[in-house]
Amino acid sequence: MIKGDGMEAMHVVKKILAVCVISMISCGSANLDSDISKVSYGIGLQFGNDMKNRGMEIDMKAFSQAVEDVFKGTESRIPDDQIRAAFQKISEEMMKKEMIRSEENAKAGEEYLRKNKEKKDVKVTKSGLQYRVLKEGAGVPPVATSLVKVHYRGTLIDGKEFDSSYKRKQPVEFKLNQVIPGWTEGLQLMKPGAKYELTIPSSLGYGEKGNNAIPGNSVLVFEVELLEIK
Image (cartoon, rainbow, N blue to C red; front, top):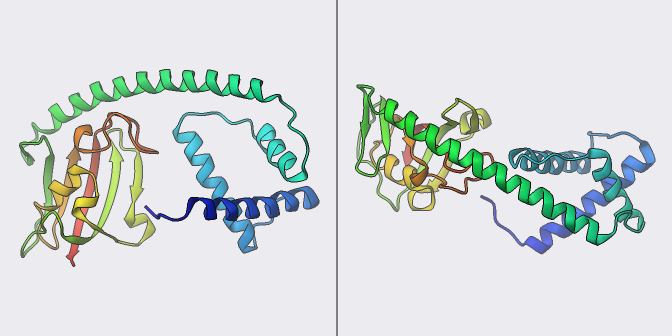
């Protein structure tokens, strides 16, 4: 959600990685006490989570060797054409796996939505959004352009949590026309103080492509609490 100058951010990352690699080379182990080490560790977490979510395996020894070689000025140990060929092969394999997973998600999602809407306390809108009132609020609901403050928890249909403001202990603020359609519609049904469960079809979520930890064609289940309309 945070935007910035990509080139500037890359320069910062390079400097951090340079310090990190020099530290690893000289000390042989990671020291996580300094700010540089903490940021470096954070970059590693983000990279690792991204690769894990993409279903990509990483040879950590080869990865670390490559980073070390770059900052030591050592010539690449593998010819560029071999690296490109390997990237192409892995990319094709990942795309095939993702297509299969996306198709499976679509079928599982349809079945989940079918069963969920049969529950007596679940309501369905014309768009296909399903919602359940956990706690009703009071006052005037927001409109599509409103700035709102919410707490939320998001899971896939298997119960796997992919995001939670509750865990971060920090509510979030955003305009309703800047989020996924299921949120834009669902929050407009709520009044301040309300808490709803929103079951969002993939067409009202992240669609076929997905988003980071959210695979393509995923039905999303959110527990949303509307704290305030700004």
